[in-house]
Length: 342
Image 1 (cartoon, rainbow, N blue to C red):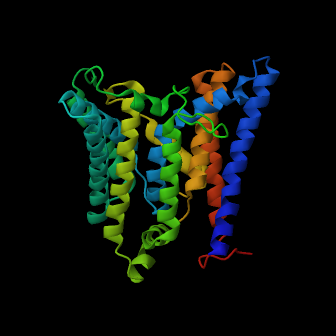
Image 2: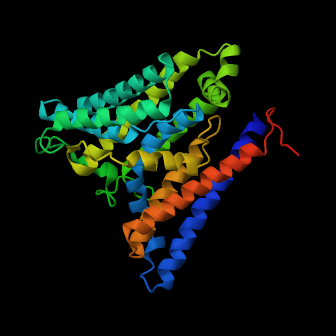
């Protein structure tokens, strides 16, 4: 157990170092160009934190999928669809807690559909989720109807929900001065990350996830119920994605079927940048969170420097390609037995 923990700590050093380099680069650049130097301030950290909540929650679910050797291109539109379901529930007179439940349930149903098509029909995850991506987008628009948006009744979204992603939540709900007063969504991500870490590293299910991603055929020979485990993985990941839809509702104050278009790229990028392998069998919760922060820091840094959105896209693309290339080189250095080749 101690060796396994040491390996995870060593593996986490790369994403953490990359995050520190990105933060340092934009911090220095902001100061050199005559900016106010606010990029490295606590206010900037709070902003990056609350802007990361939605992607981080969905990326925790995506981490499970990618470790198992899969991928989900429908994550963005499924989250938006789930947010529309929550908004629809509020419009029909349900309370906020019921709306949250329906959103998570909708996301889990989307994940179950993906898992069923992939596991039972033995179809390629990339193609299946590319198709369901447009299906969930269409379903969200059908629910919203009015231009793809659905605004719940005034007052149906309580103030405590809005403070989930507020940069300066008032009142200060954390009295202990040693902890920053982030929106509580940031601390929700921390709690969920701990739970997913325990699931991955301290349970039989977690060992099955890594085993399937490393070699599905070998996992079957070892007695792993691959089909059932894949269904559980995609359903659980879908529940996280449904919760990300709740964040949309808190942030936008409405359901928006188009809010998730393109978000799947940020989610997958966060996992890959954090050390997750698209070939399966590798990934970590801590690395994923570092990847999320890298993605959001690049966005915030480009804004602080007054750079256009195209520059942000180019930088993110370069980092993704670099992360995938490093993972490919790492795999090439390993022999089939898992030992470093000479």
